[in-house]
Length: 216
Image: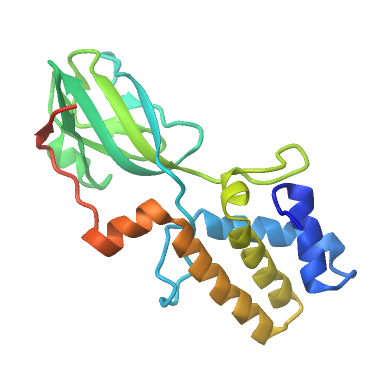
């Protein structure tokens, strides 16, 4: 059967476990699976359990000259790149750890060169112009429910969802061998699903960002 909606996923979990005494726990299995999906991807051979990164979402706008912060998108999970355009030239703004931003902060106003993320994007300086920006980021997974019946992971990678849910289901029933099998399947499927993220690290190593100017 197809697995593209919340109700179809619940039916599939019940079918694969072949137990009618787990019905009241299925939502818990889905909730636990979604905590995994939000994690950073990890190689299947490693001990940690990684998550899924979807296709990069891009958000454009202009910065305010009255503050050195920018609100995060509602579906923001993880940053990929932030660029600003000034005088027809687009430059990459370098990310720094929140504890390090104070090292780069400048008084007055100017073209931001560094940023960090807490509950907002915070720049090293207040913009001196309404610079155009483009934020490229990985979107988070919106939890499934009766009112939100699907999301991009379930649509594109139903095997990832099902494997994570069945891992928790068989872990709950203390079937260690079967739960491990499903965990192994989940880890492989989740890493494979994170195509953009996965290729960037397999082919190029860790992503680094520079402040060098680039043309649009």
